[in-house]
Image (cartoon, rainbow, N blue to C red; front, side, top):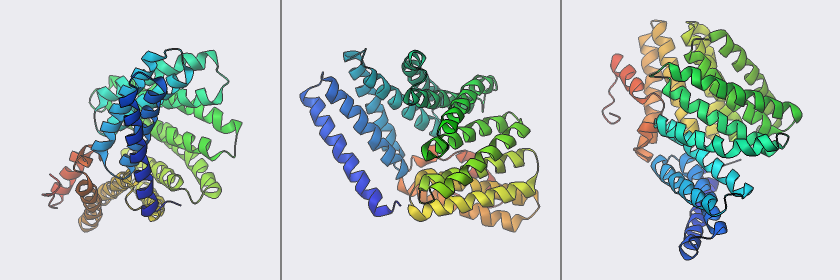
Length: 349
């Protein structure tokens, strides 16, 4: 189980790894091992920074990781290990860029990740590691294209085959090893991403079926790995997907039930680390969803109560790192909703 003290210790070790690898590159700037070490260190450091809510630092770390990785690849273009490493770096960078609304950049880095890994998988389609790397890269491209689809519907159709491929591949991996918790986690995460896209495309029945399938797997995962913060986050994410799908299809009672179930899972995750920015961002979305459900039911006082909780989560994240304004999904829409029901947002504008 993770706690704040462990998180601080992880951050300290990540910082030390970054420092040591940067020194190594400074001494041997053309050495593949040094460049690869720096790529790994900055990628891991970025993950720690993102979870702790330091989004701007995480973006800078990933920018450096990609740069070191490409330099390593240029020095060793036939090295499979380096190629996989650089693909990972681009994919992780793509996902954070998408989370911070830099969608075109996210597509670029996602496609680069896929470009690097797909030829390796095509030559070795039965290698589980390569299949995993491929599905994550495909998902990154699809997720970024789906975000561009918010303003240009043509990108929704571009996103769909990438996300369908990711779900299909992740299900194959999961069914090949039914008790593997990581494969279940992967399947749930990719289902969530595709469900969100299907909801945006107003394919509500398909989104519901997919989310319910993923929810059943999430319940299995809770039994297998109840002490994992990630497990509770995924359970919350799937229920949130159902909540937004039900809002889209105008079934507010089911939407309320789904958002409340989502928050139960997220609350369990936050008991393990109350500063986890990934969980906090999703929780703000749950409270926004409950606000909209209350408004649809005509209950303004209740809507204000939920909106107050949403704004409190957002304030905590922004105080920790002002760049969280770009990390929190639909940030302007949340502020607009607060204004519509007469709630001040001066410190968040």
